[in-house]
Image 1 (tube, rainbow, N blue to C red):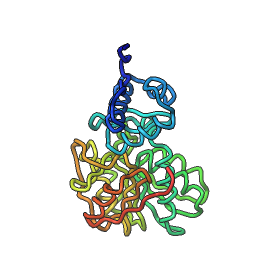
Image 2 (image 1 turned 60 degrees about the vertical axis):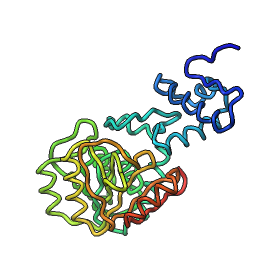
Image 3 (image 1 turned 90 degrees about the horizontal axis):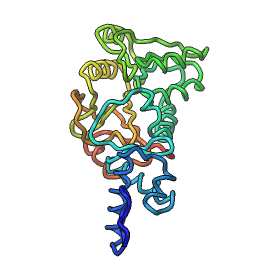
Image 4 (image 1 turned 180 degrees about the horizontal axis):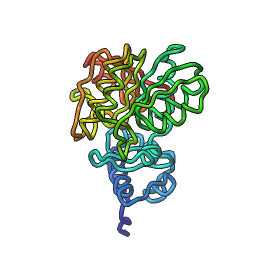
Length: 271
């Protein structure tokens, strides 16, 4: 019998469960090697593209990979991605979260909008919602919303983070301390039900915490790939008064873990 090619699973004679595990492992190996097309992955492991898509969804829920537009990438522990890289990952999930989050904004509200690609997806929806005042620490969101006549935009000043394009520092805190918000939308790199909201730097957690403290209602926007343990440098404890908005691929036990901490969880349809 011929040996399977590198990255391909030999599932002959295996039980269905064992075959699935072997195929999952083979997919992770292929992803590490840079193969990220669903069609190519399906060809290499000898199953249909629809089976690979289901496999990738399972691997995402397990935290082993993150989905990208048209494929996937391995998540071996946390590493901070550039804004452009993040914009390719979990796009449908972010769009569904944004659609749900936009319904939480009262007409004519004053809104804090965090940096990041999920909050940028929300900015795209808010651009169609009529009169608003939006303070943001995200450069892309500010540029997008300034083109909308009915939206007044305040760009929080300070030091610009080179990867996330988010603004941090004492100037940002000074501006936030002089504002009040009806709603605040926070992004996150990691959200753990026990540790809280995690970011690579203390500066980012500090600004998020200050913004949350100035808002009547706080919503934490995070797709399924961001929920769970990871090693990052700075954390904010989760406030039970906050609401987590996530996507439909989030596992029920993950939702229950956040609800057990006293948080309300909204699961966006679709994504």
